[in-house]
Image (cartoon, rainbow, N blue to C red; front, top):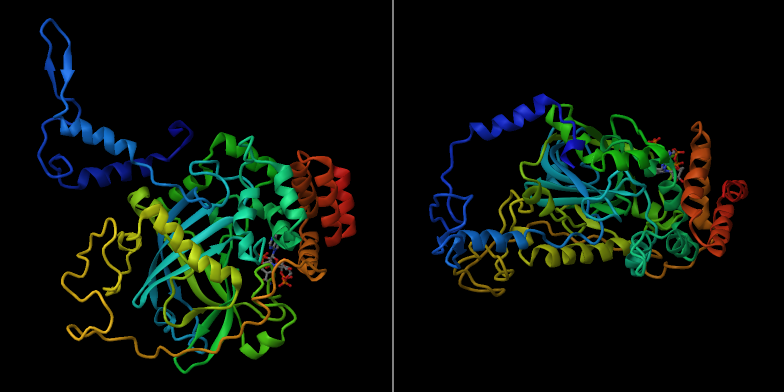
Length: 501
Ligand code: NDP
């Protein structure tokens, strides 16, 4: 694999000199015992030649045992990723919307960790394939961590979280053949057509970005930006690349997946390493509760956008990736992100997908990293943490609050509590009941995107060929239903796909 990489020699030299500059360490076992030779097992010579290993060779036993346990479970989705560190800077005042401290002042900077992934493929798989890209960001603010767990398309495939495992399975491997399966993929979407808008995004050329520097990122969900005076706005957040959207065609993405399966990881790493720091502009759309309650779209439906003409983009920040991980496993693989990780001034809305992700993401981290995953250096906030009712558990390594009381309302040690824990009105809209019923409304924004593609030379043609290239391996009755589904977006589109097949 390594010979596929063509790091420029400056980068290799810099990386090597970082190692040589540190003081020379003395090699020991993991529990500190100095060792003479890390490259030889300990053995006794047999009379007459040969040698026998000894079970007392702790160094050998530990090296073999540890090696067998090096892999932690990979994420069931978003397993394959690139990562970086960076800085978020407030560029425009939005204190009319939120009292979040990290957004309180123009010029205020907050460091973050970011991980950008494909969704379906396994860890180590080719990273140029057609897929949504996940964008997970942990901002280390003065009031605890703020995680933004976004995607590079503005909408999601389903709005009822009970379908989350199913949609992901349909994009992964068939249970019998262990192969990606077009019949399974389209059969799921034919029968769950609320996904049509996300499919329009995925099968446009934006499904195969030319690099991670050339994608946008979208919050997808509606969030609440709140103030200590009890008021709030609904917001949607968008990060737009400052380098322009650039995509591969389907054929280019397929070719590069074979030539360099790590194209996107390498591109991001090399650009950051040579100081070409990628950047994005952060925008939001905001809506008052009154506007939300009378808006034509259900704002808790993650398959819909808020059209720009109704709710224009308002800039508020700049995002720069400026440092590579020092150690991929410690910094990126052990990172965990959750939409439930929020600071005062940002709150969840009634969006059912958001509510479910707020359970599901930390639950996945508990399984993958253990119950004390928040203590790992990459996940730990930079602000003080005092959470003594959450203690013990495997791999607890930060003192475990010593003798402090482990129960609430102890008279033996007092603590202070956040001021201004104001509760904000809750409006559920149609969020709770709105789930699997698909109506013509679900096709309106997909049709709008088809029209947007018509304004970009060659994009409608590429879309048709991208769908047909995937659909051609499905069984005929699934193909027919898929053509019917795209005909509901635009009659001509259905015909073009049928013709291309
Ligand atoms: P506009 O007509 O004002 O602008 C079109 C939007 O579509 C731009 O944001 C553009 O991004 C984006 N876009 C262009 N090509 C693609 C693609 N292949 N996949 C995804 N997005 C693309 O937008 P409206 O608000 O009136 O919405 C029209 C349609 O645009 C929507 O139905 C939706 O499908 C799509 N869209 C809307 C967004 C929103 O938040 N309103 C966000 C993203 C897409 P860019 O400016 O980078 O070219």
